[in-house]
Length: 410
Image (tube, rainbow, N blue to C red; front, side, top):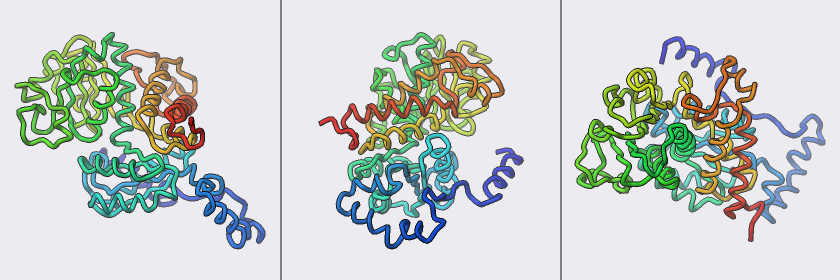
């Protein structure tokens, strides 16, 4: 990070008030009578109503508009395992984004444990306070087991954004890129560099869209994940390919697409040269992508490129989905966030990139105009239509798939 940005970020977080979120009152508290309603004796009335029917918590408290952002700090952004307390600025940041983009109240909770069961037990015991839970920055493979058990044991949506948020936004952009490149997903050969939670979630959702397992080559830090390897866990083994390829250089030759969820500068210009016509390159490592767009375009001007950075076209940014997925889920009072809701979010996000860009979005980006194509395959963060289109699509999918407690279908 540039020194000036580093210092400005510290100033931003410290002044005029430390941190990024706070609490505001939603009811009057000016008179003694207001206070008698807010607390004793008036508060006894909603207490009794909730005791009689727990669903009344949605009527008399903020539960239905409240999301917990929870981490143990074992995989903070690109910084690694720096502990629960160090993750607090990131979790506060997620809470800020929930409020900014979806008007959802959110509170960060950092749990100081690396034990799966301790973490699960803590989250489960506090879950009744919230309408939904956003898990964040938990390292793989522990994150898989943690999320799975919490989904099974909680009756509110539990969503690990590093997995599924990344997968939703990546899939939306990737499918639109295929359309621009005139490629069919069932025919493309994809090289995925990275085998952590985000990579695995991305690939699983692309399988649902027709990506063939035999057309996927996944690599971890030791090379191609093949059936010959004996050093891979069962999460990676699901993607093992029967091949003699061992390196990225082997796998990239003739590939239609590259998905990087790994580290900076791991894809070379020489390797990009070897890819098929109109290659699709998602270099999503942050802050340094697997290859810089200008480096790739210098050797392959026909490439369609996305990164995780805001200073290049086609930013793959989870803020395009997680606020709106939760907004839709909470509006429908969903018991979970299922595949149907994720697919609905993907299709809604895809559709926005094909609409005429509104003036408000142009103004956000210094008057720049956008039209669907190689430099605009995914909407810009802050596009107000994300709230208007994605959240209702997710809510409808919750209702149609019968996970809405507010609008049950049977």
